[in-house]
Image 1 (spheres, rainbow, N blue to C red):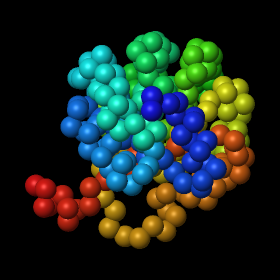
Image 2 (cartoon, one colour):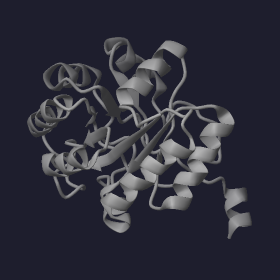
Image 3 (cartoon, rainbow, N blue to C red):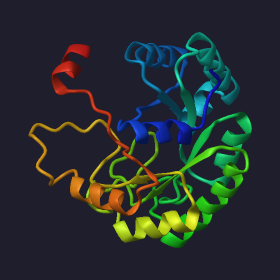
Image 4 (cartoon, rainbow, N blue to C red):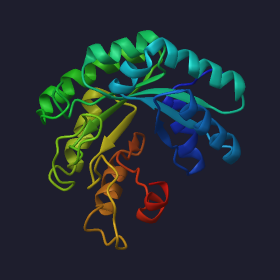
Length: 237
């Protein structure tokens, strides 16, 4: 099966009532491990690369590794996604390379750290949507700012500083036409450890539900979900 757009994967997930995992990669071994897990669980998967990963692995190597993955695992629906594109130019380069999905993170300025304005975010995201949709490529946008910093992405804020406003999220989708929307509900980039059960104080699940109720046909994306438990970390170390 050739690579498909992320929209195709998410539309099917919505029908089936499940989520789709997206995993950042830098090399062949990581892609192999993810595809093996996808085969074992019979799951579709989103393979994503950040700007740092693209620079490290070289786009052509990465793209052909993904072609090989679709040949070795033909039964697994897979999308190749650009994670946290910082400009329209970055997204265009990924589209031209053969990525089937891109994220335009206009919630931050091109430095990947400074929070932008709503107007800037709408303008640059809309530009990417028009360019991507003309080639059948999915676009993910972001409204609200994630806490923490990982691989140069994030404003270094605590996770509650810029929680997504539901009304603004609804307006953003109408103005841009994005297929998927990353929202901030207290999520943070980085392997943050939590020692107590969730109470709703850190992750605002009620805000997630409120946004979902306003955007029934737009797929919501949760960033910052990775973490290695402390006991396992001790074993690895």
